[in-house]
Image 1 (cartoon, rainbow, N blue to C red):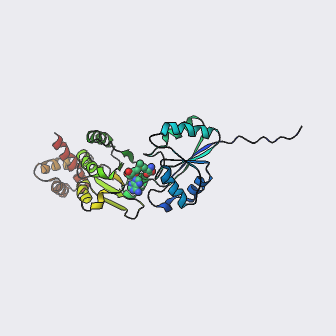
Image 2 (cartoon, rainbow, N blue to C red):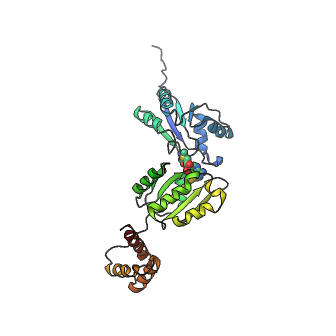
Length: 290
Ligand code: SAM
């Protein structure tokens, strides 16, 4: 009997490839290899991706997968994956499927048993969080807030998880978003504006929320470009057990502004000034609400 060679069936693969968020040099060598070696690249805007591919001499065919055709395009791409195609998925910038189209196709690939792999790289949220310097064991990424003011405030009221909060925001809404953050969390929280990351006019600035509106208004360009907002964690509240310093603080708060009351209470009781300040803020907020 002749020794017949039967080729093994080719398995499809969906490869999530992160692309630059501004600086074209941030496309990794492995991302280049993956894009060049794929059968097809599914992209949000084929023109944007072709510009990137041309800059790296990559000629792979592209197809569109964007917010308006996501379901139909995902169905077609899944057929190709099941037929053995190796498909790279990219968005216009950063990591696909993170506040960008793609999750539908990824979920369909999992459900159909197609291998899903990643070529990680740029992501605006993670870059901004790392550059914020907020010390925390966890953070909350909430993507874009709703555009309508009432819905935005409702979401903010629900989001205060006590850890840093990362938000994407459109430049024309950034001032309104900061005002809503002040309304929801007070003026004393810290915020980091991470603007135009990896680009020529990159700015990362950390300040109290109270100073945010003035910072944004200080230069015409400050409300242009791309923004990530990172809100700092809730300040720690001093332990309740220290009843003596709590009692002294309560008396002083009735007569003095928050920072003066905290300073004086620290001198009288020997407790930590920072802890008393945080506690005084919490008490003042509580009495404002009452
Ligand atoms: N998938 C992308 C990622 O991995 O970061 C995010 C896409 S989302 C549609 C676009 C938003 O990301 C922008 O509105 C902005 O909030 C943020 N963003 C993207 N590039 C940025 C950059 N270079 N600097 C600051 N924020 C950026």
